[in-house]
Image (cartoon, rainbow, N blue to C red; front, side, top):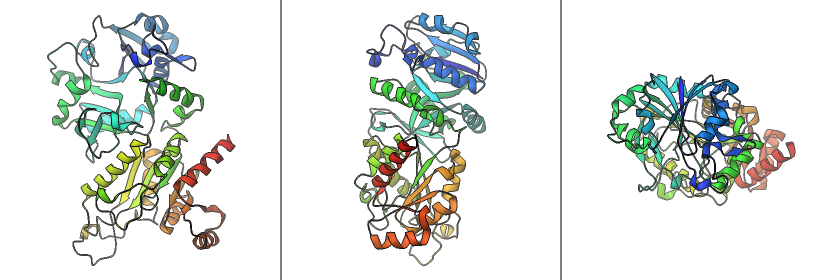
Length: 436
């Protein structure tokens, strides 16, 4: 598969770091951004590259040449006039089949074989690599259905209230068929607004969600963060070819105030310190994954759509603090019968309702999680049971000494007890720092 790298940007927002070279050539820990990209591509056996250059592009050609020094083949297309994020694609006549398209200002380490398999399975016109980020409030939001199909696209300026934190990362797989289907009718073309968003109606634009490390170099602050993440090894550790560590988090009473069954977004309120705690999990390099029983579906008290809106509010509120959850797994079942309006199809004895470990095991399979290096945190004894059954370290949240003593006596030293989620994350970070 051929890879196209869009490396013609001027990088005005990071010009204070280096204004005399193209943004993709800005050095991080001794290497330009583009070299990190090429290393990841080669590691995934993608060695046929085209770099699209423009502003100060000779610096890129002088450094990388024909690619032989790096173990790949590189050719170049030079934009004499800026063609936007997609204009050059319609100038390249030798593109056949599917190709990888990457923004040149990204630092990433991704298992691209998973992405390619997803794209091929979906027979997509284009597949966007999407992920939650720390600033969804000023990002374009991608909305998908249960199959990963893109069904809507909110630009930065579009109004939104509650939303799932899912953002286009700048990595795509595009088919030649898409270029033959799209007719921009102009030279300067914006990939998102002019091509991908109008083609949503084809039902063949898909989103591949990943927790792997992908961060753009749009600001000085992000440059500083990426530099630190490269030095501490977080960038490479997050590649899904490596086992991941996770903190599985119960929802009600752990992330939000316990108010019985929450059936409306208006009743959802983050606990004090919860967003800060989730942010600490993010910074420590653990996946933050919500694991929650939601019998309101089986009891007929809310629909799947209403539950997802509640979760959208949770992600929106966390995003305001720069925090994110990598995924949410919920059990909609409830075995007991006799509720008005109950839904019989959900009245089953399932394997996903805590204290059974089904949700945790499903997450572990999806994200290659090492359960022995992970935690299950919650305020209910069912959370402890699920964590132990899955092979995680169980963490119980309570401020009651009698409960703490009873549970310690029952579960022994493997049980960790804290007053709240923030208390646990503070302790976890100290332990991690001591271990390193």
